[in-house]
Length: 257
Length: 254
Image (tube, rainbow over all chains, first blue to last red; front, side, top):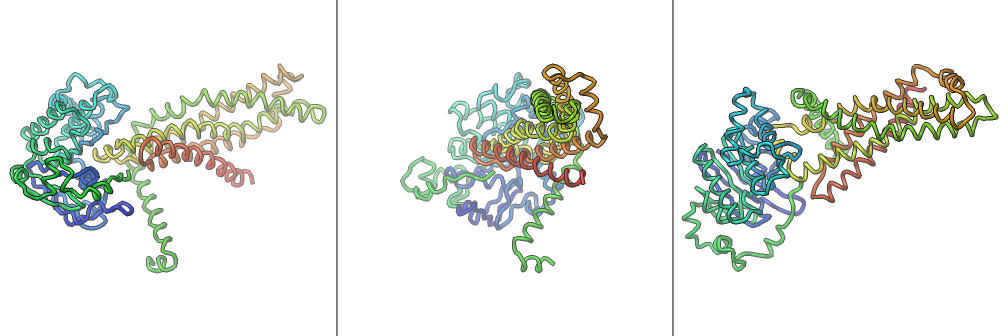
């Protein structure tokens, strides 16, 4: 289980997370929605210790991430698959070598590694592209390789950062089906960060809306469809009215690397 | 102790903490041999072997200019074989290591900073971390070790190239014979000339690759951020060469 407990994070003058509290149960897909710049990706990076909270705690399986030493942090990261918004493939390596990067750290024998590479590429239907370089692939294919790299290590959690951003509707639909299929096949707990409501409704067991640094509403897909909260409704329906636009516009900052 | 430090100078405690943390991280990365060891040979080829042409190019022309310049200075004042002495001594001890270092500060330092900077801004460094790799072990250590080992090799070739070009220039463009040139070359030669240059070039290799790596890891934003850290890496590398050059002269020549 992953828990955010009153997490606060700011970059300079920009308060990004301000009392963010959320439980992510095992075996379910939790989708975090919110406007661009609302802090969804920042929240995700806290889970794997790429960012540390200014205040509050991020707990993974009962351990505070910020209090882990290097060995514990590496061990925790090895149990989590992270799918980046930009895919973040190593552009000097082939597709297969990208997937091997994670597997080579596991002390697995050669046969198991080969079987895992083959299995993960089959899962994302990219078996024929194993020898391709990332630059030879489309954006959608790169994201699928990113997913293959994440699932190859058989993680306990998979974190998806904007998995459908920048994709055409058909490819986005394929990606949604893939996320759902992986969940069914592996039974892994997933956290999906997105502002795409089609994705949220397609893959979520639970949805949490992040607004002004904290969770505005948590519920099932049905509860979100029926919500009467004006801000949530406006976001789901893609209407500007009902949203505090000035606040949203001031959230267009960039996370320091 | 912490309180005393903090009361005296709040920034001091912070600085001490950062230095301690950096030292701990560096030690941890060096100890992670299984991660960096397989990558060293590839980096030695990229940073070292591939740099040989530019180093030789610079050395060849430096040797020619030195021969002609020393002839201008010495002919009529001292015996002509001093041309060989000046070319050999200057290239082995100073110009070979420093000019090679300067050229590699541009080629290697910029290459490393741009590569790692691009990896940083495209989240590839974050991806490494999520795959349980330490970026210091995977990106920094193999490059720094490769640079430290290969810069003396490249410098040795550059020194040899510079001396040979100086000799060829001396016998073809000046009224100097080969025996005269080599007489001068041997006359003032000391064993220290070689290892002095090699020790310097090894330290240049460490400084340039470290500057490139650390600047690259600091990249933020996009292309502009990568460009900025690349420029800083080259400037920092070049400045480090000059400082180290003076340092080694003070330490080893006194």
